[in-house]
Image 1: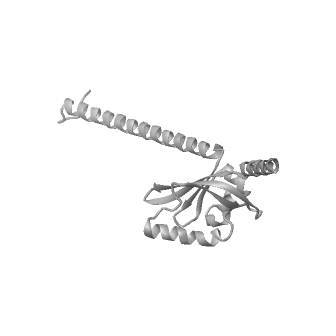
Image 2: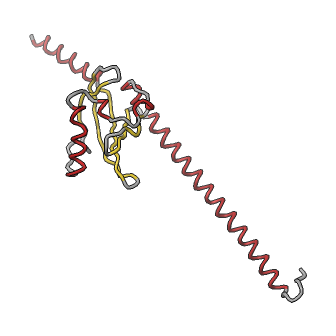
Image 3: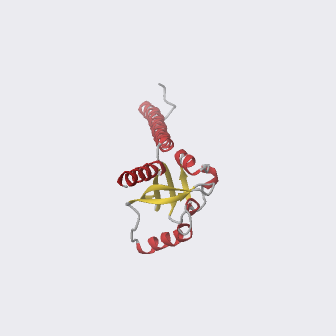
Length: 177
């Protein structure tokens, strides 16, 4: 390599070496960024697949009660499409008087932090889009997420189980007569 007049050959090689090193470092960073992005996309896809194939209904709400997630099982169970309920108050899935009281429960929890149903599975009544009611098992969890909190409900329709219980009780009552 011939250096321009007044410049040492080693300085030219140093400049070229530095340039090659900088290009190589940039290529490594770009490749690493792409790998991280692909891994994150794969994780999101995997999480979405799990949510959408879950047997139980999964419904997540903001701490203000707005529905943020409504999986396919929730769509089948409640008769609403996700697009119809996202952003709406979760109380639309509840019959009266629970519907009217729900926002007050959320507000009280935000103010006091006192847990009454979070972390506890319980049986309640829900309402479908057509207005019919049905028994469900509801398990609620609080999830801190991105500087805020959301609440996620895992919901199971227990109509069949309740019907079997009623039939069994009727049969036992008949046999006991």
